[in-house]
Image 1 (cartoon, rainbow, N blue to C red):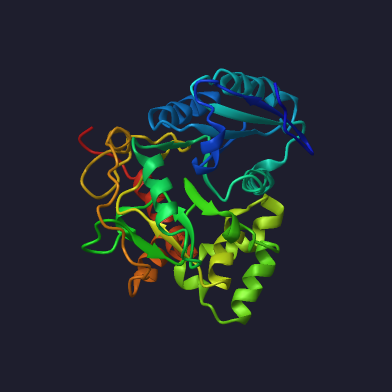
Image 2 (image 1 turned 30 degrees about the vertical axis):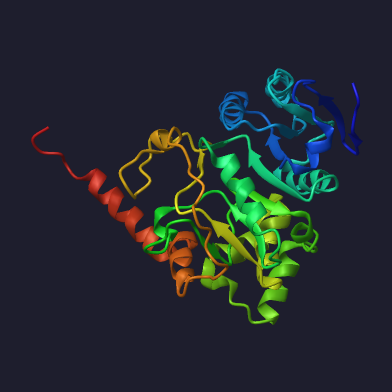
Length: 324
């Protein structure tokens, strides 16, 4: 079989002859799938991709951090090699890069061969129709340099009133996302450097969540990648397109029964609801004051208030329980 080789990885391209149509490959939006040591989560993610009729996957399997992770990593790779319903290009890392470095190098690798990509991790499950929605959104806004990403996840508290097809935000979210080569190439520099540049330019990134500062300051030690691309949006005046209802569910917290806060639909039920492509895509305009919703959602609660609530809970737990 043909192989694709990169530093720290060996690539195995598994081709399904019935699906390969070389003259149309450039029209397919590839999925970059990142996995480490959770085979059960990965099975659910792959099943959702199969149901959405994804035709091309670049799977990046990170190496084990230590010998105790080798068995789980091997199981993940067996799962990837069992995929026979689409073309899959498997990149097996010989060493552990960590999520941040794995995603940055992996996305760059895919975008060497394609002008756009959809990215999911092994705990992100897409809803039926989410792949087509994302591919169509990437196509719809491909000609507008302001649109740098399509964020596949959204929360009801972030969605503006009377929003139907979707909306735009200066902040993007990485629980399933799509981007373009031209946008990704702008992502240069460490997160802390990018944060300082934003501050020097007076871009007020913290209006979109005070967590941004913490992520930028701790990115190097924790191998964080997301905040760097987030800040790149601000530096280049970019925006991200969000769906009116989330296209993905993050199962990494193992809280699939959590209520999404909108219609009473649980996360588990949401996974089975099909996604419809908008009849009319919205214009590229960031709604006024939407940063307030993002700030409220993404800003950690104040330490003093959090400590006070914790103390109150301890006091209540020590109180005698009468009538029980």
